[in-house]
Structure formats: C-alpha cells, structure tokens
Length: 90
Image (cartoon, rainbow, N blue to C red; front, side):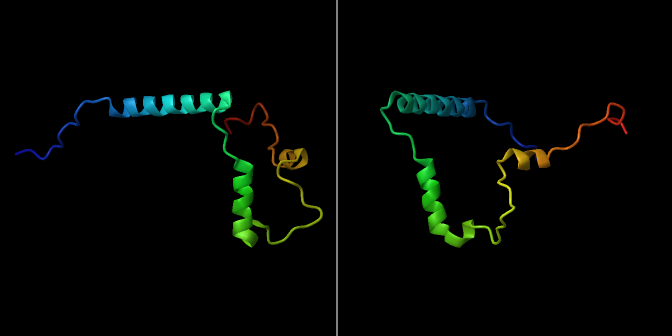
C-alpha cells in the first residue's frame, strides 16, 4: 500500500478553457467594434454606484489646497530622486 499521491490525468482542459475564453473575448470585442453590441456604460455604472454608496465615497475632509492625484504636480511630488551611479550596491 502506497500513500503517494496518484498522478493527475494528462489533459488539455486548462489550455482549451483559456483558448475558449480568448476566442470569446475576441468575438465580443469584434461585435462591439462593429457596432452590433453596445459597449457597457462604465461611467454611468460608477456614477450610479457612487450615488448609491453616498457619503462612503466622499472624502471626510477636503481642503482648498488639495491636489488631484492625476495632476502633474501630484505625480511629480511622489517621484523618487534619481539614484547616483555609485550607490546601487550600497
């Protein structure tokens, strides 16, 4: 009697499933681009979600000097200074 696990049956189940999902995605993309199927309204869905959640989606405190995260000033503020050539291994 052996307690070793039995080897899994050889098969291409995962590969076939992945190929099927890829083909389905490509077909849906082609239908949306051809105008046969309307693309989902993500902005509307997010707006509805934020209205449903209400105060949970609003920051607790806002200041007049706050910077939007997508502004260039906010992005440049979080960048790290360049490394010096001799300090990489230190």
